[in-house]
Each structure stands twice: as C-alpha cells, then as structure tokens.
Image (tube, rainbow, N blue to C red):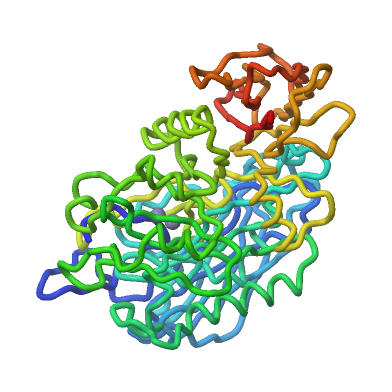
Length: 516
Ligand SMILES: [Zn+2]
Ligand SMILES: [Zn+2]
C-alpha cells in the first residue's frame, strides 16, 4: 500500500521478496505521553508500546521518567524488576507524580533499560533507527483549556490498537483515559477502521467470522465507562463504504453496537478494492453518520490502488455531519468547509465535527513515508489536536454525549471556546431551531487564554434564506481573551453561526442555530 500512513509505525513487515530497509532486529519500542498537561493534574502518564516482541523477546529491567529542567534533573522511577515481553503487542501504562508547582515547557525523556538476546540496551523515548532523536516537550499549562461551563471537550476520530496492519498500530482503548484526561479531554470516540475490526487478531489478512475484535472493543468501552466519572469513551468505527460513484469513502459511525462491515480499501487482498458495503445501505439502517475527511482520499495513488473517492453532494445527503477538520488544515479542510456552508445554504441541517484521526499518538506520530524505505515524524494528527466541544446539561455519559452530538450541540476547535444561545432561553443554542420572531436576541461568546492567543477576529455570521450566501452580522477585532456579540433573529436568514480566530492562528467554528 503506497500511501503515507500515520500512527505507531510498524517496521517488521515483509511482502514477497522485497527487501525492507526499515527492518530492525528488535521489537519496536515507543514511549508516549501528553504534550500538554492541564493544571491540577496529579499524575503524569506514560504509555509504553512494545511491538513484535514475539519475534524478538526482551526483558525490561528499568523504566525512568526524566523531566530535563535547565538546571536540575527531576527523575522518577516507573519500573524496576525483570519483565519478560514476548507478545505481538504489549502496552503498559505508568503514572508518576507531576513535578510540583511547575508551569511551562520542559523536555521529557523516558529511559527504558532492557536485555535482548543477552545484550543490555538503553533507549530514550523510542528505538526506531530511522527516526532522528530530538527533544520531546511537554507543556504544563498555566491555565485550564478555555471552555464555558456545561461544555465538554473530546476527539471524535481516534484509532486504538485494534487498527493494526502492515504499517501501523494504535493505543489500547483501555489505556487512553489517563493521558487523555491529563491533557484536558473529557471524551474520545474510538473509531477503528471497519477493515481492521473484522480481522483475526493473529492475521490481519484474514476475516474473523466471530468478530472478536469488535466484541472486545464493546467490552473495553463498557469497562472504561464503568470505571471513570470524568472521562467517557464513545463507541464507533470508521467504516469504508461505497459512495454513489462506486468508490470507497470513510464514514464515522458512532454509538452503535452492531458492526457495520466495509473492507473495500483494506489492501488486504491485492487488486481487490471494490466496496463491499454502501453508504446508502448504512443510512437505511438508521446509523448516525459523519463524513470522515470528506475531501481527502482522492490523491492519485489511493485513487488508483484503493479505489478511494470523495464525498459527492449525493453522498453528503446521507450524512448527519462532516468532519472536514481532520487533524490538519490543508486543501481538504478548505474544500470541506466551503462544501459544508454550501450544503447549509441549500437547507440541509448538516453539522460539523472535528477530530484528530490519531492512532494513539499523544506526543508524536511516526509514519512510514515509503514502505520498506523511509520513515518520518510529525505533529499533525496528535490526539486532541482538533476537538469537538459538546454542550451537555448534565455530567455526560456515553448516551448523553451521543444525544448532544446528534443534535449538533457542539463546535469544532483547536484552541478557543465558543457558546451561542438565545437570550432568555439558554437551553436553545447550537444545532437547535427557533422561530425567527421579532425580538429574539442571540448571544455569542468566545473565550481564549494566553496559551492559545488573544482574539484576532470573532464573527457572528448569518446564512441568507434565499441561499445566495452568508453575511457577517457582527464582527469584533482585536486583542482580548474574551468576546461577546449580540445579534437579532431575522426572517431573511436561515441560520446564524459563530467563528473565531486568535493571533496564534488557533480557530473555532460553531454549528448553526437555525431559524424555522
Ligand atoms: Zn479515514
Ligand atoms: Zn481515521
């Protein structure tokens, strides 16, 4: 599969007689931890992944967490002993007290001492030969993530260790709560690929009639949700479905317990890439469907080899929402946002959602840029880099989050917080519909912190009822960390929405409040 992939990178992969220059005579070891820690977090989480130790067993004897302050070194022992690791994938969560009263950025080094084939080795953060070692920084935030009361922060596109194939793997869904909470997330939607969820654990080229991976995912989600009060996993999948043009597109499906199959672009069987399930069929089953990165996927190679396509207008009619802010803001984002507004102006109540598309990946993601040959490291698509903030009237659980996500009670952000409500009727806001009667006043607010930057622009935008375009209703420029705008309902508009941008380039945009 000649496509750059993201996630924890797999270097032990052999296809036919092709040499693999990335191969190393060791398991892959990767130490992951958050790049940002919310104030008040007690423990610093580290998740260590050891991959393919069934090929190369190791004894881990010591793990040490080091905060490399300029003058002092702060060390915490995480493990001492003799731990045999000899499984295809072992992931370990360690927690250790955060450095007291420290705010700001500090390089973090996790040192792992282990024995392999009788030799002793020590590595820092990872052992990938082809990736340059650099300092990995964590910010201990001075201020909490901007968020209005009654709002909850999450990532709606995230892959666990069940997404596992030739070139990538992710983090165990049962380990994610600790690092996610530490960075300020309240929920994560686990959306593994349908073409991975239907595979056997031992062999991702073979389908599992019993769907053990899917069943295990349901149990993992239930276990995490039973254990935690301030963090929720939302069950889901990223289904590969056939679009109207017979090409494979990705759809985030959330909140269902019955697996939706789809393996057209799995690359599991060479030269077979026709969709084996369709968007239309999934729609008819009544699923909650979000178009995943709707305009990324039609690059030449995926187009040819995986029969990937993009979401057409006809396809988008079968979607409840669009996730065009998928980890980064490139052409796909621009195109997606334009299309979203176009659909809104045509009268479709289609919501927007944001996610990272991370595969584990808190501090860095490693990617195989060219199979067998070249690797790289990047900070796009890190967990929580793009978020969906959901308004919930009560402390959310999975059902409450889903209900509010489905109603569009949410906005997309990589920094600032938003809120939008009808004055005198605070339970009516984003995603809702009101009568555009005279005297209906709307209040929009935006909030940022020094970490995310002061506002450059906050705007209240209206979509014209005749569908000819949008108009800026109110706009505020400059300087502050808070902004408040008021507007009046107008029968010439079909909706209003709010957008904000900070001086550091962070953005947020809300779902519309519709006028009947
Ligand atoms: Zn995808
Ligand atoms: Zn994905």
